[in-house]
Amino acid sequence: MTDWMLTPELSALRARIRAVIDERVIPAEQTILAEDRAGSRETLKAIQADVRARGLWTPHLPKDFGGLGLGVMGMAALFREMGRSPVGAKAFNCDAPDQGNMDLLLKAGSAAIKARYLRPLCAAEITSAFCMTEPAPGAGSDPSNLRTTARRDGDGWVIDGHKWYSTGGENAAFLVVMARTSDDPRSGATMFVVDRHAEGVEYVRRIPVFAPDVLDHFEGEFKFHGVRVGDDALLGAEGQGFLLAQRRLVPARLTHCMRWLGLAARTLEMCRDYVGARESFGKRLVEHQMIQVMIADAARDIHSGNLMTLHCAQMLEQGLEREARPYSSMAKTHVARTLCRVLDDAIQMHGGLGYSEDLPFTHWYRSARAARIADGPDEVHQMVVARDFVRGRLDLLV
Image (cartoon, rainbow, N blue to C red):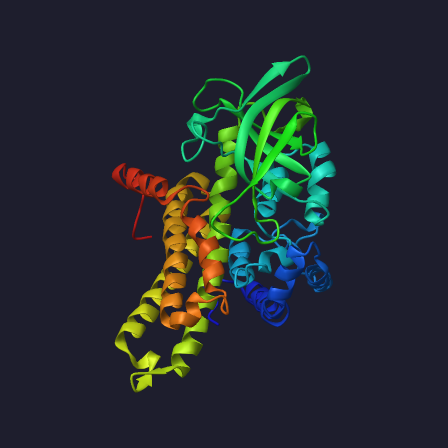
């Protein structure tokens, strides 16, 4: 394993994370998923206890919140290993959307919010959801379409609106809700922390989607009917909603990329084992040139996605948030497409076996297809990259 750009300490941590994933998590995947469908998390909790005992719990968090105080580069190194399993991040309490919400509450939450919600979230005692996306004609890929509103009323706020695709919202203890507080195109939105069971919060349904539900990865729909919150429910200040969304989404895109790269690499390793042993038309599959092309394309795309992600992570660690945005868009689009393509080719290389549910590729592909929509569809990210390049703000030979 070549640890390019990583310190010796991060390299050692990476190896420890990989050992837990390969020795504990991957062998227990099917048991964890079966137990979850039956309403139990016994095996997952046992692995989480082991992770805590090894000192690897929520490594991305500051030390005073139970983590290891790693920067974005550390997250990049470790999340790739967790991503080798669809349940890996959950084992370390680093799964989306909780991990992104932890970072958001750390940056913008009041002392009261951190005490009530952040600490139990860091301890995996509760879960959370992020409520920004709305059904049409509300906010989707264009946040300026935001329709949910929060209006001043006495010493507090009243929230009305409709949200969906709030991942994990059904069982969440709290929701981060983006609402319009003025008509200003730049400072017209504000984020609020809302108790999931507050009066006026209506959980409409779990949205049936293409992918199977995995642990807390199910999509919720909410309506907010005159939900009252106080000033202490604000994240940051009034009007900072769009700014905070960007601060959350740029690193969140990278954490997705990290996990997707881990799963793509594991998929290709499984293909290597199969095509090296399976014989067809008088020779092993790996000796057929068309198979070699699939493997070469996947190896190139995973490697280039890894470089894009590490480069962007390094920029964020240096405080270059604005400059990193087009690079995060480039990485997110490339890695999302790579994961889908690698899984599609894996199914093809395995033939009927790959199309069956005897292997996990079909399940993984159905979940991976959302990658090209979540946190901004491909087309929006391409627009960002093209716009910044045309304006002379994107250096390609870094």
